[in-house]
Image (tube, rainbow, N blue to C red):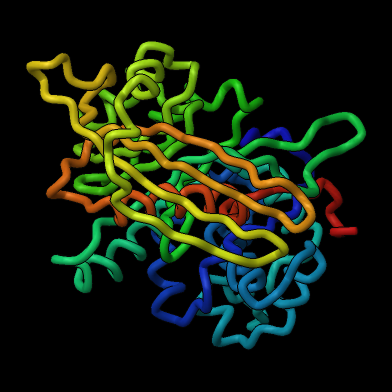
Length: 351
């Protein structure tokens, strides 16, 4: 996020959760990596201390610059010491003022802050998940773009973010601001490059089903993928649509009812041996067809078929696993809010 944004107010670190003393200490090295935009002269508070005040305040419910400063003003001396607030020669210890917080957050590099928090969340998530999941399901990560609510201004449209988010639990591992949706594909590699994706499953929609990105994801990052294929990949799309799906039995079904509608989804998979030409997509092993039927109250039933490919073989994932991953990506895309380094309000008072 460009540093030129003036006096932004962060909804930073919304999903960090409670920060105990040990977790605050764990977060400190990541904030140390964020470059300080200020001149060396006149600094009293370190950038890390200011960011830690903001992080602790936000997870405590603060949503404005004034509330961030108020949390710091009410914090105990011992807590401020743990955060890294220096003691004055006259023995008082005070948290930064609203003006100081506003100036720092207005000048700090938002992308660098996103990367720092994303690295913290990724390491924390992997550290919790790996011991329990050594023989269980693989980690599933959705790559999706989202327009940021509340970021539009009279002279600027809403900001657009591209994020890498785990399906369950929902944790944002990386995030970057992109100019428009049409620019998302160029941010795919830089977004995922810092992450350890070995053995993980990455899901994304048709916009990111770019052959060069897929090749890099599999060969360099050693990850698996599920890619939705639409007419922007005409060769692969016509091949998938032309498969004899009528002759393939349904391998998994699921139905949900609620919010005035009933929806059912069935999935079929098909492999094409290499000697028969394989699938016209890099490292694709299985072709997938998801058939959706939706009936809303008072309306006619609608039907839709969605095609996808995956690098997972039949022995690596069942049709139910694939259906869960595809449905999970849709759920993340529809509901998951941006949760990292979001600078969405240029009003330093948070009004």
